[in-house]
Length: 470
Image 1: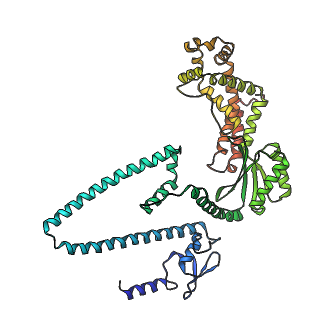
Image 2 (image 1 turned 180 degrees about the horizontal axis):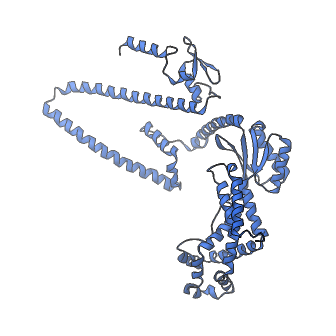
Image 3 (image 1 turned 180 degrees about the vertical axis):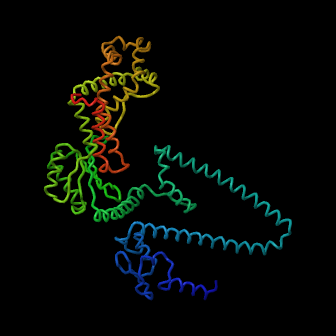
């Protein structure tokens, strides 16, 4: 294309009303001479042309203030468009480099005319061989690089699933793009400089969520747990249709768990999120949290306190264990058997031999569900357990002649324990099924919790043949 043709093409493309750039779908040309563009979403006017305006829509914080009203689909489309443009520019730069190399090759051809024909053919033949050797070298080099990366993971005790992190692959791509001479970040840069940058980026991402909170409202969720140092930690998360984000974590080890203290803590979190944005607070259903929730609703008239569904079901299972005699007796018997076996190495080996490596104890996310899941393991391993305590291995061991050993053997061989376990599971299993559903992240529990609880009650009633006494 000639110079005059190129200029005419650019003028035609940038002429108001005849522009193919994606930015003009969402911007209004205010003054083509001064390159001012008005945003259709927030009505702000930007100078500097359509390039700055696209970064305004994409919220990249590059050369332009981000738009607070742009829809998510528009933002993603513009970001994808900018990314493709950057890739196209990169390819063009590489092409220019190759063309320069071709020009140098033409100069070499002029010189090579002075070399005899046989010498040139020999040179071409050697270059073809060199290409094959280069490919082999590159393959071997990849093996060496992969081995070194793996060794780094091994010697640093880093879990292998870190290679599934998408940022792992992106980091290696950036290193390859940099080329030879790359100097990795220092300890100080990782710990201070780049950590601060990522914290700032996280805050920028959080701004998008805060905008959503103002539009649709949100729920604050508290989650208490104990770490390996026996510290009591309370995490606070905020949920909205856009997703769930971690807000803050508070060490409550030195805070007394009175209703007033919990109320002050929850009230501070509501103040941080904004009372006008909060629809409900979701927390444990213990007495102190319940009273704190009532105090919060008295002060903040626009929000509700809601008990955690998973914690409510866990408390039901706790009541089963503590208030129903057959459940209390059965769980205590099962605990006695597991404690006796798992405190003796020889019996653990014997158990795994008869159960094909399966264990009696079943871990769970909630404390009281663990007891009933373990009872379920007892039922699944009933035959191997009874076979073990009837076998020659058990009879010939020193444990079978002790008082405790005879007591445990009588429990396992007898029929009462097994009938009691079945009775306990008739009531607990329907609730554990609901607990698994509400404790997962597949879908929000509010849409199905009431129906599932009704089904659980009906299942329990059927399990006991509709006899109210049972």
